[in-house]
Length: 460
Image: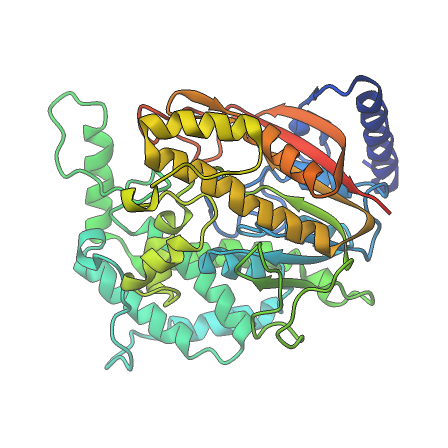
């Protein structure tokens, strides 16, 4: 399809949706996979350079960037819950600049690599040095990986250590980070973690005769006992080199766009990392035209646990640092009963009444949900601060259940947003298949089967 024609059509579709909502004030059902029909595969640019749980459907940011009603080329787009960089990449591909914040250091690394054009010839020449014989007399100890012998066979540990040593010697930071992302993807594939699950659960050694998992588990374990780690790494490296090559035209573009993963905290958007050419300071007021983001869900996500093996092998978090890293996550579950002496007050009467009711049954789950809304208020205040007058926020979220009671996350976030000065200009509902971590935690939880997309405006 002609790109200019498609942009024209998307602009018209969005305008019609805005008009319909302005009249009805009712959520409008959509199917983004059908609405964005110019690509049918997830294999688009560098989106598949690394797996990551609960990734935002790329069709959503694509749709809201494929028009000039919410933002224009060369504008700045922000995702304060950037994850592995879906919004950042789509912003770059649409001709925008992009900024992101993300708590998980593995996700920040993936997002940087995913949006950084690299010289493929340099990657290929570096690859040859990686496989020039095994590393002897390693300079560094085996990385601090939590329960390493539980998750990896001895020969796998040895070979991964060899690759880590070779990557550490790569001088160019961007090229080194590309190889680290490939290594991270390799780590999970050669581990004893069940490949069907996002969070690491060790494959069982034995199943009873006739069990549906017996043959599959035996086959996987037999494969891992003799797996060639270097061959797995080579295959990943080859596939990711092809993907990163799709960004090469941007490297030579006369109009250079920038993507910057700023910091780890959506509640305080500031320049934090060395990759930035800015000194440490807050992101300026009124500096962003469009925010597109999908924040975590209350108590439903375990991003740090999902990333634990890679975080260790890549030296991004020591085994004794996971508790602190989890404590920085909005929507976290790690609260002690002593932290839950009374219900959290959110300022939303409907939510506060529900949280008091839940607290009587389960103080910890009530605290998880209440703290989530309180911290999301801080994040939304920060989004409002950095948005330009007449800028927009696209927020993707979903309702779920807490202790068998409906928790209307979408409505509560909308109440918070409107209370701090946003106005709702559009609400869409899209049925979803699965987003990895949206699974039953226990008997009090529920599957999330549809998402809401709220579009807010910031007045001039």
